Image (cartoon, rainbow, N blue to C red; front, side):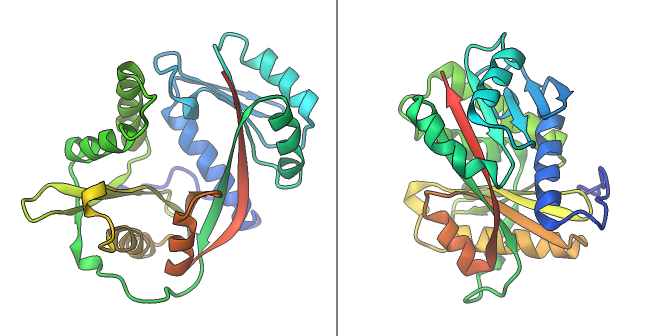
Length: 263
């Protein structure tokens, strides 16, 4: 089965960052209960999974200021128990951080990185195997479970969304197994025939330090190239260490996305 059946071919005139942002936007839209395009961007709503911010958000591509964004969120997310705003504009994002921080919002900055260079050293990609959905989700449950504040209901919603998201985007699930056959590290790969994303890279604590994340990300990049994708990217927490690993594998910064959340 062709997991990477094209959803939509990007225009050659679209810049790489624009392609990545459009790809991410489309991925979220496919896994949400409902979407509502607005002039500034799109509103995603998933009442069946209120704990999953990724599909309950105001996603804005236009360069709006703090007051305009808050007013738009209050208008468009009036039925939500919280406000979650995602800003894509590269010029507006940095200037918004201080205003939202001062107002007490939670801020997350994601770094978008494109695969454009050779790795610093080879990876042992031979350890990477295809993963079944249920076993892959078991490892996702361990990842989510590392958050001590995550309740049982929220965990169930996040896992349900992970299953829905992977199916909606026809993701290829990859993993590394221990000697007894259990998955101990995972990632997934999604693509539209031109652009591909490596996502959800995680290794269980007892298997860390063995190069599994490097192997998974490297293998996913290889598979994406074989499938004909000319743009391959990954998203990293701009404040976290994994971006350093991705850079060593050959990914380079392309841009950022800003998330502002208020409960």
